[in-house]
Image (cartoon, rainbow, N blue to C red):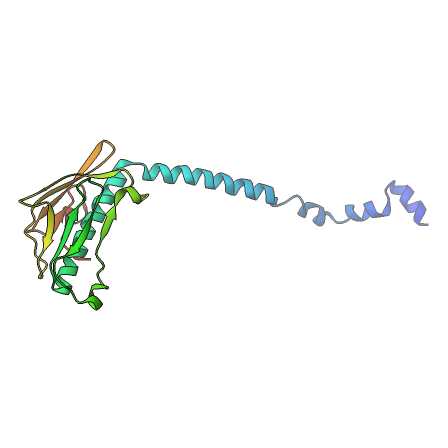
Length: 194
């Protein structure tokens, strides 16, 4: 009897079994293969790498971030001078490659660890590579000094450049010390210690 059934349909019994289970056959056709997933992820990674590098290559973004970092470092050193009750100075590298802070007193070493001295070197920082401090125009000095109470007589400007673009950080002791002219938030004034 089995040979007659096979001859009636013209198919072997094992092939007939696969035809009677369409769910298994369609399951193999749905979804992604591993190769398709890997190719999709590789394409997404490639597009993202170009987008991220293009974003950080914008001179506007790089200069704004470098200026914001300088303003934040100034505020941190002002907070260090106030908290440790010791004078602090921010000294700009003559080559224009960055700046660093120095203590002008002897602060308590245990408390000094809470406010580490800042140091920036643009040529060794991948994010700011190519940024330069073009000019430091401070009234009567080439550094920013804070006394033990956090006050600074420094007024003037620090000009930072990247490629053929430049931005200015204004220093005024009467209003929050630092001013970013291109920052709409707080109308440019950074008068809150961070």
